[in-house]
Length: 315
Image (cartoon, rainbow, N blue to C red; front, side, top):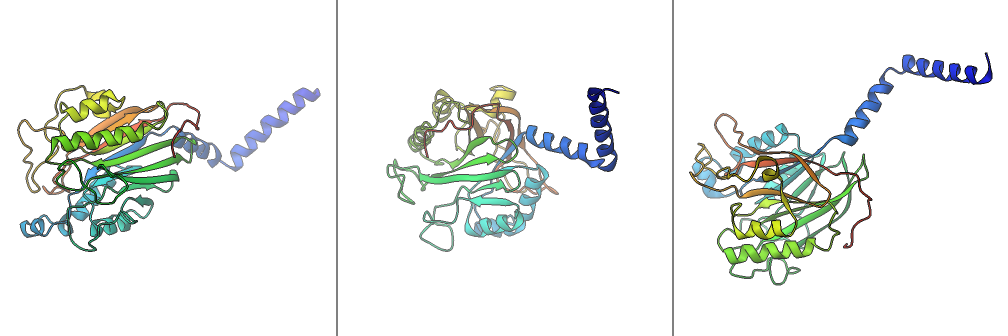
């Protein structure tokens, strides 16, 4: 047997021996490959603020938080973007999702009132500690003075804000950005101006840098708000997969399915840059006829196509 044949033979025998001694090796490699190619599931959930009047009607936070957690867990998200989060809800969700890193409640942007609801609820983001490395995060208020916490402009009914996180996928090294917001529920002028702030701020990133925008936009898909967003290069993940037909309202009553006839989908997940949406669904789950919120939750599975990691122009 010549040297080349002997070397090949020894190498092959070594591979056979390794497979015999470590039968889990190929399985572990397969799992790593699956993790690298697995889509990222982004779930957006308006969980409704914890209100005493809801408790009096039988669907307060204490009676539905377990339902909320169970339904979110049922859909196995990698990132959870919540709107209408008060302190008690933030504490509960942190306890229920210890493997997730929270951002967007604690900090200098806090409501001046330590207890109760005074018109400011937070848009908290929870991200899987197992899957992502934290890079940076930030917050700005949707007003003429975006660096002043709780500031209001344009006759907005309540102070509104946007939280964002920049993350790195531990398995692929992909860097991307997730934004979470909640627009005004009364003033159309305020909604449009609030939207423009988000669009202007996100434009500091390169055009193909992957960004995902989630939230309760308090406006249907034909509203000027969404025309502005789409004109700026953002893609509605749901419409990109299901078409532009109106789905009906994503808000409803708590105890019975009372979605308004002719209502509008007001909860959205948008993508921009090198992001491909694979699945996008509205979650209409209940548990024994009880809903987790007065909103349907939504989720989207996305992939980030191959790209250089450093494509960011902002902070």
